[in-house]
Amino acid sequence: MACQVCYETFNNSVHKLIECPKGCGYNCCKQCIRTYFKDILGEPHCMNCKVEWDREFVVISLNKSYFNSEYKENRKVTLMNFEKSRLPETQQDAKMFVLEEEYKKSVEQIKIENKNLQRDILRNNRRIVSLHTAFINSSKEKVERKVFIMKCQSSTCNGFLSSSYKCDLCTKHTCSKCFDIIEEGHECKPENVETVSLMKKETKACPNCAVRIYKINGCDQMWCIECHTAFSWNSGKIVNEVIHNPEYYDYMKSKGAVPRAAGDVLCGGLPTIHWLRNQLPLFPSASQGRKDTMVANLYSVHQFITHIHHIYLGIVNDPSHQNELKKLRILHILDRMDETTFKDKIYREHTKNSKKQKKMQLLQMVDNVGTDLLQNFSQAMEQKIPFEALLDKSFEMLYAFSGIMKYFNSLVEKYSNLFGSSIGQIGIYVNGMKVDEIEALQEFDTVKYRY
Image (cartoon, rainbow, N blue to C red; front, side):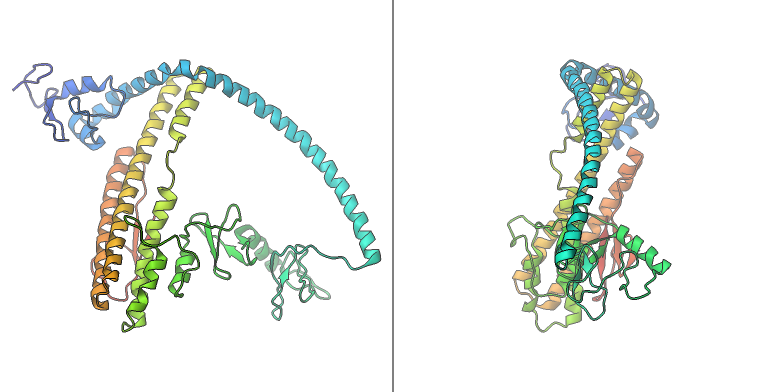
């Protein structure tokens, strides 16, 4: 049997028969595929049906040594030549790049001048404040601006401290260095000063009630357990969108109503916490402990899917890949990057983008499956089946969700080996202990997921 391209007889060496794994039935020899791959611009694919081949299939079929040497170098040259063909259209961008550099340099100089002016203005403003303070003190008691930064440190007072660390309710002053009430003979304790300094670095005040909140890790969204307000850690602004902070879910477990909900169950969408929580009173005969455990696991799945959906899949039409390629072309056209570096960086950028797209595909799979599982569970709740049957349904959901987590992690391991860097696995925790998969749950076991 001979290759239909070069007519050489198939063998177990360079003319080994390779058949398209995507089902079109086309085949030819290994050498012809290697030759075809020298000039293609896109990812490796079948020369007949044009469907993209998995990197793993290419490595196994054409040999790892070929993939890491000849193919990789040919790929670099092909991608570089394509980007070089776009250099004429980048000429105007390069011109604008230089103009932007000059603009930024001028802006920085103006900023320095402004800073000097602001220093003079600040000095004069201090003089104005001193004159104003002297005038107010000579006529009546100074009226403070009501900017509250934290609760009063007096155990018998429920007031708040102003920006000058004075409580408007009990009129006591708090030391800004150690957070102790200032009394006669007050001296700061070094350990308290150190604690307060650390607290100021690691906490921020709730924009609604001024309670200081720690951020250990995780995303930008915070949840104040005092006044039940969600806000952004970075901007300090109150959040009026979908809430996925863990503290919010803890709050939901203990309440029968939702302060803010994104809407009811939509066809094809994720059931809301509001809707799911309101179904629980339909099972008054079930023990509270069993209901609480089921709710905790339900919330855990819902929170994880919401986190994946809004944090990792929420960015659409990300232009960063094309912007990076344009930047490389600009640097090359301005002679700030030699051809070898240009070629290598283009290849790395394409590899980085391929890894990112694969990660998004895997997370989209988790998002879709998790949403389907919660939809099926919500339908079971609507049917008002007995609590025991619903509890079994919740276990089935957890087992199925664990299965997709295990499958996700297996794919992550495979693609991490292919890309040479980790995509990141999902951790499964039963009663706080990390497990590879969920095998047999007891009715009071709780499950959490981390990515």
